[in-house]
Structure formats: structure tokens, C-alpha cells
Length: 312
Image (cartoon, rainbow, N blue to C red; front, side, top):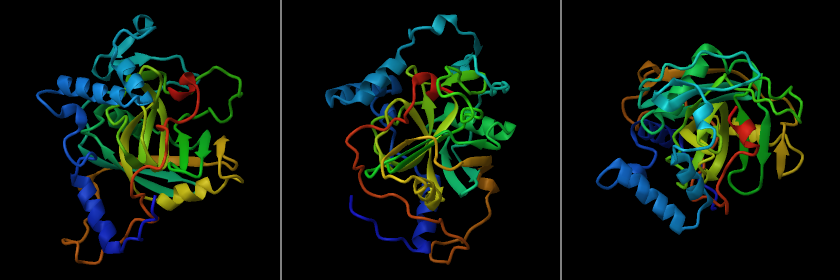
């Protein structure tokens, strides 16, 4: 991938304003094209299977309502299929699933700096609603991220967080560290090119808990993750965390503690007012450089870990 030209502050502000209004697919999402959303889903699955994509198999499996073990679970809420889970953490009350704003901003505060994410509530309503719920209840406050994966090719870094207690747990433990419940997450962006995103980690049935991953660089996500937003500021924070490793290729607990202090959610209407036109000088500009260009990875992206760990 060709290195991108550093953008000016005016260009950064213009792109951020466009992102707040635009669909992340830059058009109609694939599963909504054609004569109906069900037909779109079938068409998307057929295209991915024709390409021989691993993501296609996982996506179709996620859509199968007859997954193993589903009959034994207690359904808490029909919307988003919220079900009970046996986690080692103190449980958090389940979300009252509703319709989140189409666009909102999540500020992930870490000991290395802040990362701002534009959440796509219209693309992943269940995922965004759950993420905002964990933020509002303080579940994400003061915990260590449990896994860091780095490599030379895009995506250059995947930081997994959102499972309080997992870092201090025994490595051979089968316990999961989630909120005490799971929900069906949206995996409609599987197989689509993305870059610099926030994703929820799901199990092999598409269920998510509290675990999330910040993905730095271009990637093609599989159905093992549910992309719910795009990073718009704080790129250099992830680059700094990736630089903690002694080797380019790394997969394991971060070499030095990476802590999430808090996650704050703001609606776009609550944000400070910026300049009226893109020709004016913005008061602040995003830090770091956004990833541009096509992914350089040969394989779809899924955060490392077993299905039981991934759902926590």
C-alpha cells in the first residue's frame, strides 16, 4: 500500500464532517440492496461463497437460527436476542435494547491517550446500543486490555479490551469475563474493506458480550467481529501501543499494561460547534494519520483467541 500524504488540518475537519453524515459503505449497505433486505442477505452470502471466503461460511452460520446450544439459554430480551451467560465477573444489568442515534462519538480514554470513534448506530444498532450501555454503567472503567496483536502488514495492530478481570485470570482458565449476558451482533460488514475501526468480538454464533477490539490499519473483517464504528482521532495512540512490542510480529498480553480508564459517549448534537465552513481554520484537528488505500492483508481479520474468550 502506498504511503498516504499527510492531510492538512482543513482536510481533516472536512473528512470528519463528511464521516458524520455518510454511511460507512459510501452508499447502500450490501444487505439492503435489491428488492429487499432478505434478498440482499442471500445475495451477499452467494457473492462471498463464490469468492471462497472464510468470512462467508461464518456469516451464513451466524444467520442460522438453529445453532447448537441455543435451546438451553434463557432469553432476557427478544430484541437483539439478549441471553444469559455464565461469566466470572459481577454481572451488569442487561441493556434495554432500543434505537441508538445514527451517529455518535465514543471517547476511549487510556493511559496512552484518548481514541475517538464515530459509532454507526444505523449499521449496527444492537452493537452500538450495547457498547454505549457498558460505557454508561462504568463497566469499561479502569480495566486492562488483555491482548495485543501486531504485524508488518495491515492491520498493523489489534488491541483487545473490554473484559475486566481477564488479564489477571489464569491462562489455562476456561472462565469468561463478560457482563453476564450476550446478544446477537450485526456482522453485515464481514467481507467488506474497512480501515481503523472499532469492532465487538463475537463467538462462532455471532453473539457478543463486552469484549471489543481497536483495529489499526486496513482490514477485511470476518463474521468473528462486529464492526460498529470508525476511528476518527487518536491514531497515534494505537501506533504507540503497538510500538511496545520488541518484535514486529507479536500476539499476547501487552508487554506493558494498557489501561482503559473510561469510555464516554456523546451525541453529535452535544459536541462543541466547529467552523461553519471547511475553509475556516478548525480549532483542533485529529491526531495521527488515518489509513487510506486497499487492505494489504491476504487473510480476513479476526482477533485471536478461543470462541469462549472472544465472547466475553
